[in-house]
Length: 218
Image 1 (tube, rainbow, N blue to C red):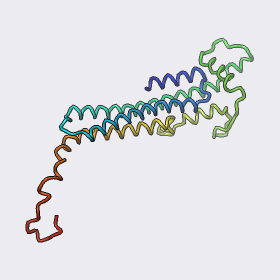
Image 2 (image 1 turned 180 degrees about the vertical axis):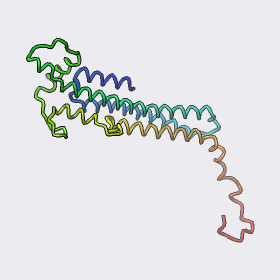
Image 3 (image 1 turned 30 degrees about the horizontal axis):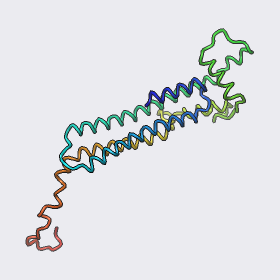
Image 4 (image 1 turned 90 degrees about the horizontal axis):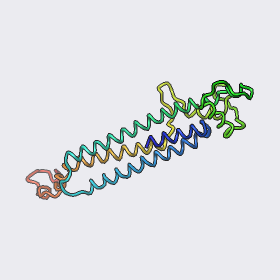
């Protein structure tokens, strides 16, 4: 899933060089969130199967399998966090590239050395942002709105954290983790539960008290 999402971000960089970032991030967010939700549905179905099962059919192998599924859910969550951090770095780089005015300083002449990324950024600006709006970036400096937007999305605090770029995916991954935890519990509880099912029907619960001296005593 994440190689696919990374490819989508790469195409976004190549085609728009950072312009209209919120729309692209929303699409990628929906893609990852849908995948995680489908996995959570599968885990819920497996958990339901365990709950409705009858017979001693679960053993250590089932428990190990369930724990492996939980490990995969944890790996998915770590991959999402790593991907979020990587995309933020790329957004910061794109914002710097938008501010690069090497071509504009050339007075209509191409410089001797020009990076492909610089050329892509110049072409994207001509196609996506012909009349840029300059707004305050919060420090009193006027910058293009696209740059301010990219820096806002990529902002982090002193601990290196910030608002997630993919909030729907974060929620879906949390649901996936809970579904996996429930599945692990159902599998591990299945064997002792087999031996506990008949306890409520034991004849001892139907016997009268023997001289307890207290009719309300249980």
